[in-house]
Length: 180
Image 1 (cartoon, one colour):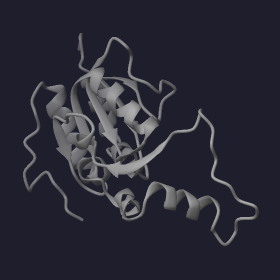
Image 2 (spheres, one colour; image 1 turned 135 degrees about the horizontal axis):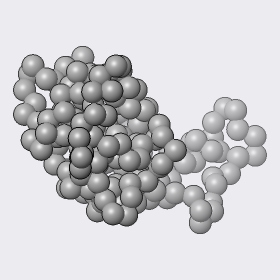
Image 3 (spheres, one colour; image 1 turned 135 degrees about the vertical axis):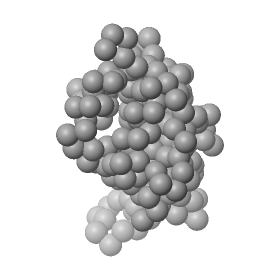
Image 4 (cartoon, helix red, strand yellow; image 1 turned 90 degrees about the horizontal axis):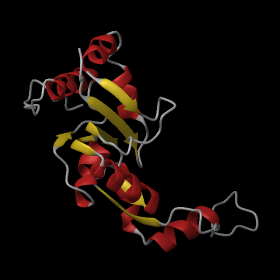
């Protein structure tokens, strides 16, 4: 199929379960790759969407630091349709539980006060991401398709991606959403 829609994905703060669920479409991945051209994912050598852009961008996980915010803004700028994949991207998910304490308190506990820490100190280097409160993707950038689930089922992901490949926004109804 000439001029297949292009797809890129990345993950932010989460467990990578949504990308594992994407891989769980099993042999249907061959069918999907007949319909789309995969350009960059965490599971390929290409890690960033091309500057020329892609048709569909998929982000898993919430935004919880400056690097995640940069990745989210870059993906939004480089895709026509942005998909929030999974509960962390859609709602903020488990990582937002950290928001009950300040970033400073969380870093102090993680690097200084843990039972296993000896002479701990919070890493501080301009190359390191700056911690932020964890947020759902649409609190940072506009999202076109929300695909909830922890993780969404392989069937749900396959349905959504084949709909997007056909140029349609997926109509996610009870039959396509699996609430575990």
